[in-house]
Length: 192
Image (cartoon, rainbow, N blue to C red; front, side, top):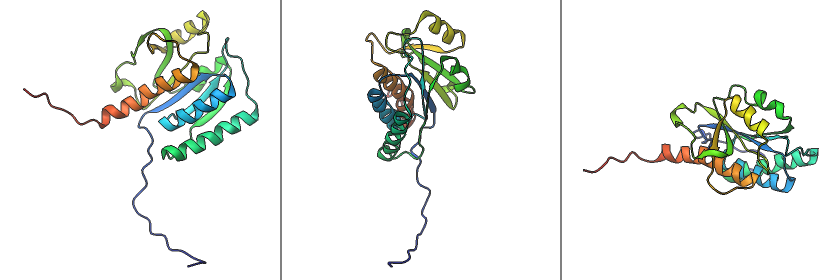
């Protein structure tokens, strides 16, 4: 009635969260383009978006930009029927990559010299991973050496050079959506 209601609980609602947790580390770049990235990365299931300063991307966001990213992520969670809001942090200093990815089982960085699609064996990914995307102009030789020395796997996306947000979404989609698609496909027996 007008002053009360009765609620009957049904079964638990599905979370629509990927089984694989992916943290996305991207360089700081123009807030308008970063906004688009936050929205789309949230829709495909990224668990965290960490903005990172590098030698070729030393930009800082204002508090208003970070708040806007949060609002966009909340709307994208609703749109995609997710249940969890991704963490959005930064900008972080380059030296924070280690602490930001502490405990992450699989680590990749997008690299024009990496083999296209060489993500490794999905059975060895573990429960979560991190994808590091380079700035416009690419990694400096020192940055590339640092991530290689830290055990990050270089992966290419093909012959074309993509903008930050396109590269980040393409890589995240391959890791998240491709993985979900593979696990959802029925096993097909070879006909003889």
